[in-house]
Length: 191
Image (cartoon, rainbow, N blue to C red):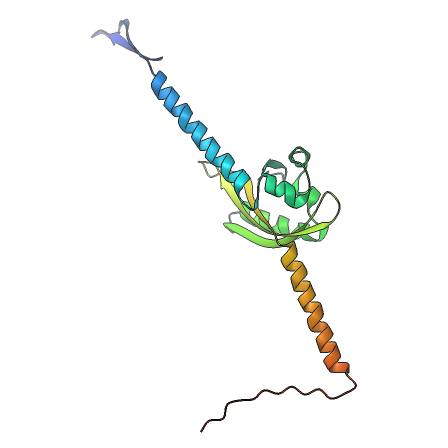
């Protein structure tokens, strides 16, 4: 029920009584609840079905919300991560850069940032990720929490490393070969 009351006032400002109205708002409340459930299902579906890790992190660095993909990337269960901060699992050499960017976000110097960095998985192995972070503010503009999107790029980083090593081996062979190696290309002659 929703009720409204208004005073009845005479010409001298005296309250003579009140007039009230009451209305059944059951249908409106049920519709509102259905919209909220639908919105919550869409949000949860997005969080859990997307192919990247998604995290919400408090301003002090603690995980507030984590999707399953992020758990798979870092090798921790959700209930383990909820008791940790991002600082607990970040590779120490990458911590300063992350904190620097977060300070810039909070100071409103940048709208978001992306960086490649490493996390230390539960089994102590390293995982390379591409991390994109933005800051959520409330209606008054006050920072509330950080939103992170994490993509596992470990395979790409390993492929880049292998390519660099192969290139170094070829260059070393070229520079130290006991024979003369010549590289030439044919160019088309103009007539």
